[in-house]
Amino acid sequence: MTFTAQILTLYPEMFPGPLGFSLAGRALEEGRWSCAPIPIRDFATDRHKSVDDTPAGGGAGMVLRADVLARAVDHALERAPDAPLIAMTPRGKPLIQRHVRELAAGPGLSILCGRFEGFDQRLFDARQIEEISIGDYVLSGGEIGAFALLDACIRLLPGVMGAASSGEEESFEDGLLEYPHYTRPQLWEGRTIPEVLRSGDHARIAAWRKTQAEAITRSRRPDLWERHRGAPDPPPSGARRETKKD
Image (cartoon, rainbow, N blue to C red; front, side, top):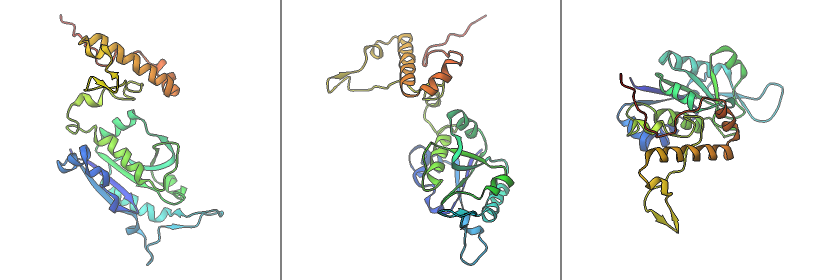
């Protein structure tokens, strides 16, 4: 099954953009996902193709019109009725890895990209749209957020990453930030690879990685650390598991 990405945007020429390269680009060529930009302006009805208007009650900027957006949204839903409809907006719920995995396991996404001062609220009152944010900052449009969301999903699709385990031992997968990585040369600018990683002792390596991940999370993301402390303690990343035989 191909993962279908519909992007409702005022700038369809931006896609696939960076998603046309590296892992996502190769997966696109292989047909593991499809990119289908939907130009919002095509659903405007006046001769000027207007998609926005001044805010009710006054204020700076312009607001995207509910009537135009609704026609675009309905078109996307008709083409992909089972795909979640998501709007990229700073006021949305923060995107987390668990949600990314849920979305990547589905048939695809329809993503609505905002511009200007945002959307007429009546669109969200009239249609089932999930609002998602990629961080506590404001961008000039939702397209950058759409790139981030799609890249996070596409890399988890079957066959996209070379090793299936690559997506399992990463930041956020077990509630922690990832442990440090090292590779050759063994000595660089007077700095050496930690001895434990050269020991060949898989149990020691797994324990070291878990300790490092905990220390980094505790110092850099105390919010994650507090949530992790309340969760069941998982086995060390990379630890060998033995299967009990009858």
